[in-house]
Image (cartoon, rainbow, N blue to C red):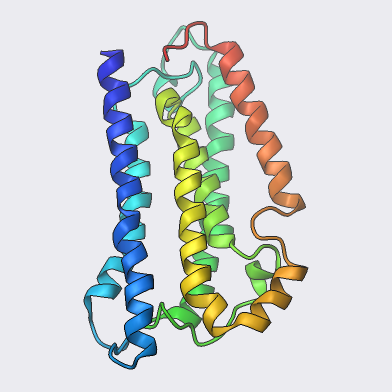
Length: 231
């Protein structure tokens, strides 16, 4: 059963990585056609559909923690397990649910709304380079909100195998940023983006580093509390 769980998680992780192919094509080929005036971004086209493949990657990584696998002692499924200290588990779940809400609202919904002002119907050529609001903190706030939200969700469900493969999801998002920068931002806002990059970190500011340390502590505590970890 453990091997089947590992195999399922690995296969889904590979599938999610392969979803980068249409995303890459959307930017590389789509940008070439757009620059040659043969692609109208205001109309429905295959490249816009390929662009949305990035959302399927995110959804897949929300599904993976639910699949059968070994779990940490503290998780939302064990709230009514008499073997787990109730107060400890309730507090743990409240904190993680609050963190999910925080990253979905502050680093998720607000950032998406801000981003749509410049990219709606024209993902290859935003109307402007956004440098205010959440983008004043880091250059990729949507990516960071998504990463921390997924990590919170994985820990909430205590999904050990998904957590072990989480580095793959981080790499996928780094590739997404590279693709967007190379085939969009660095083409249409080169000098402006270079100046913006000098003043603003790409991924982590002081606030997010503190969150990263906090999550690391949570993971260490979970490992210590879980008597048997199947890997």
